[in-house]
Image (cartoon, rainbow, N blue to C red; front, side):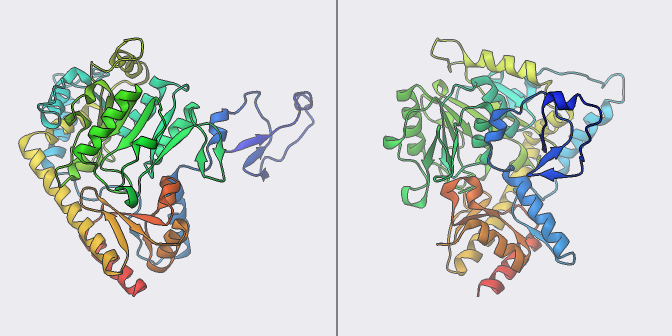
Length: 438
């Protein structure tokens, strides 16, 4: 958003003062300004959000090479059609809204109880979770910001490095982050938990400072690492010992192929220290439909003993009118036996794409991580800037990836490559990359 270069209020009152609003200076618009100061936390953000920046550079490339066939393996947007058993359920619900009998207006802000119970049964069976502890949303990313609103600006925060940028950016926006330090490319008040191949993509908790909130994503975006049961046990014990709350992002749990937990609540004691956010986006292709959920266990309480779930319920009721009833009908169809089986086939398709991508980069002599328990390959280009690698691949092969440093300073020298794409595009990308690097 543009900002203003202003002149004193007294001068603004003079009607003959004329400013040329077509001119600009460092993104600041010349012309009339209000008396409202800009949010200092927004000023503390260092650049545009990562994915719109990628889209901007992609658009510039398309203008430069209008005849090129661009392959998008950057932003993790699903590509395969939603199974018709699911879209049929949404269409039936949408058509019913045109009838007196089928019309429904506002639903419960917390979500359709049938869907909440189905999520509890399918994803949290034998973990002791109930439908009333699950809140349906319009996606996990939206709930990250709602949770930040819930917790407030006085919280201290830890994030994996590298990690999904919304954790850090939302912390900056609510005022938790402190000043940005250019020499380290980190915010002063955020604890960055180093997650690299050298430590098995799991932080050394013995040297990690205590914070109120710990953001943790498994399988991790961007590295693709799925934390083991023993690693998550350490994390839960660390949170308990420090009186912290874990915000656990399980958006990619459907891609786990080994014995790694698909939920933090598989770990004993997690209900007392963890909130879990998840989504239909990546396992059901709902990136455009928009549907997710957040789990807030009744056992999770603040330092004064007040239940967190009661405050989150108030946040939801104040800030949200509930997820689309059409999307929720689709969510129920996803969790039907036939719907769930169809979605597992789509997930399998993306996992096959990931294997092709991993095999391609490994054949070029590069070290590749991820791609087995997540739809992303994390590729190391030693000694090279991740933005330079991104630009080189885009310029020479017309393939969009994501520079690793966009996920934090720990992502430097890496790129993230998405497995979301049609098979012919994945195979063509493999051919182009082999031709360029060999």
